Image 1 (cartoon, rainbow, N blue to C red):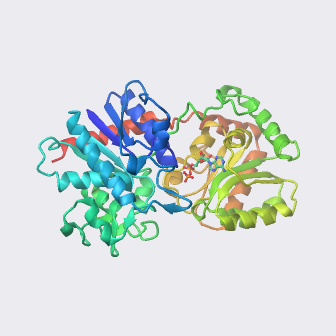
Image 2 (cartoon, rainbow, N blue to C red; image 1 turned 90 degrees about the horizontal axis):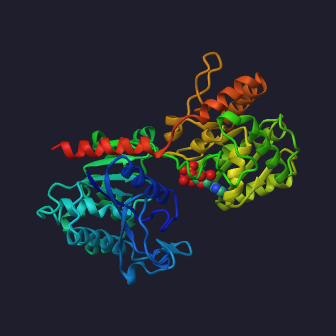
Length: 461
Ligand code: ADP
């Protein structure tokens, strides 16, 4: 099977967020599963500066769509907090040019796998302006939503720049409250839609999480699937991690405590391997449930636990957290910055990891925690609901602690519940930690799911 994987960012070439990680790892996993894959992205300045483009994986060729005017710029999408005003033009060009390039190179994909609004025009062109094109007659498109909040919205005056017939600018087409919505087009014109977890796939069909597109998604419900992201274990693996104080794996879990005391020392927390240490590493954004953490901090400060927060983001949370920091609680460490090395140390050194998200399309933190034998405490939403099962001591089932209500009380009660298990029988906790470390959330399983869906797309009329 021949697959073209299109993304506006791909690790190691260009990255602003999680999409780049997926686009860097999934095609390589697809190749391992026997698919012939090529990857396509714009040739940004950062890509050009790297010089010759190496292949990904064993033999995944990378197509770079070139245009100095559009892509030889400092950033990918915008500068100084403002989007580039010609983004619609830039990514229309990318999609058109790429489809030309495929024909020139005689690479006829069975599947074109598109990601987010920047590539949404590909399925649209294939179904409209190129519907009579013989080259693509059998090509099917899959469209993956990584973040429904970013839809590629543009003023109606820009619609002609897409090259599409004006008739498509209506409610049944790309129009969205008077604007052009590229993501909406991608959802309407692709064969199948996927998003990054089964629960999120359901949640986005409801007004609460649908960002205005719930109607479109509900209508295409039988074409919409959730496939959980994988984790790159070459980056996140305590047995090989160069950032942490002491390497360990499930058979040497007792060495994990050296990471805990190392972390305590580094953060200025009292050195004590017996006290439960809870970590959180996050963008400080509403989505992540930061207000629940802030609401629970006073109680946490008075409890027999230690807590470390690492994060950056919205100014209002910086202000609130700085205020708490000034109170000088001995058992609370607040680190407002982005720090990858410290992040590794926190995953390795903590006993529990918090993710009280309001919504979470997939979430990486809980998967990383598992690998480090750190037990996640999560709110039941999106990918968290699909990967974390509440621990039941009587059956020994579950792999974390789960709560439902979006309140500080529910969060704090669940922390308390986890501490009771932690401080109860030491052997029970070690068993749980050992068990979660051995789960497999590698990309292989996800790649298999995508291939199943590709097959189905090719089989279905
Ligand atoms: P999202 O992509 O929505 O921010 P995820 O849980 O999918 O959330 O992934 C976030 C990733 O970024 C995790 O690997 C997390 O450890 C990392 N991260 C977030 N904030 C920081 C920070 N301040 N310092 C270091 N790493 C961070």
